[in-house]
Image (cartoon, rainbow, N blue to C red; front, side, top):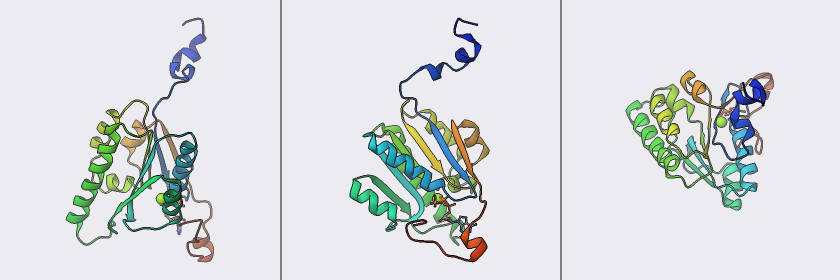
Length: 190
Ligand code: ATP
Ligand code: MG
């Protein structure tokens, strides 16, 4: 034990003010995973951080509210999806696409040109086995020490959860579609 006591010495990082890159996971079946990541993007952008978001699943030509806002603010949000999903009939093509998309993200993570990178809906690629969780974790280990990475989506693999620094599970308490059949609302969902 040192003079600062056992609790403080157990967490030396707490005493440091310098940047410490975090791996953050927003998972669970409730709404708010992507929007929470967008909130961080907005907050960090306000701090002049270099931010970049990759969106899996979403169509390359997607023009949701977040893409429109990002365009106006000069933030890079790249929709990588080709409309492919786990329902696709051609799983070979889906896997090849996911691997290719992950390759682009991997490059960005290792390059060191960003302060925050968001991999939106990326959990599915790992959950369905298109991209290996081990490879993702290896890449995250090699990232620049100050880079924050946020991964969103349902079914985050346990290995990723164990490796991550900050994990939040969104839980559905009530959803207007479930209770009233109300469809997705502009500005709230897209
Ligand atoms: P958001 O992008 O709003 O932060 P999310 O990323 O947490 O949501 P996803 O799991 O990516 O949500 O799901 C995408 C969409 O599915 C969201 O617009 C959400 O409102 C909708 N959704 C979530 N749960 C339900 C449900 N039980 N019934 C119908 N739609 C749902
Ligand atoms: Mg989402």
